[in-house]
Length: 214
Image (cartoon, rainbow, N blue to C red; front, side, top):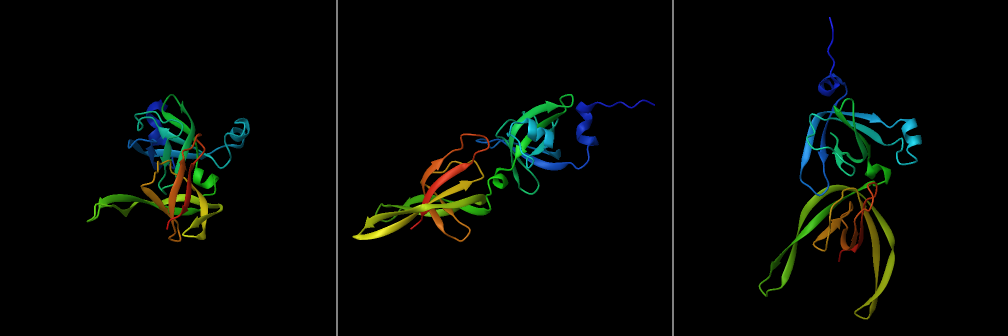
């Protein structure tokens, strides 16, 4: 009896230890899901031959091509069943075009983002005098972050010195923020956004310049 093996059709059904994931694309609400993803560690040889681009903490995700209509690409994000986010660094099609092989990195872990913040957004309405008033609403919750104190700036206010602490807040998610947003730290402290820097590399993260909200 002969056994017919077609890797283009059989990969999702013959591989053990498969996981359910969601593939997200930055700047788009489009997602793709599959229950046939396979996770593997980056090997020592892969780490050595990548000239430092990959580390032994990175992982390789194999995604069945039959479940992913649009090819994944660098900077896309794979979200696993534990809501861990894996940024794709490189991707190739493998095994007779049956799967996408994606080298990925969890940027929150690699950059030591050990805190969680919420983002609030202002909704502006006019009061009885016609002045704009902001009401803050919860917009995003539980974002992995790191809050770093940069120093303090002394400014004069009402003939007295006021010390304003400045902070850099690094966020794992690639999102756009402006003056209509503010951040809430794990201790309840709120931070006013003074500046915003988008990442210029796949393995870089959003940086927010902020001061304590008063």
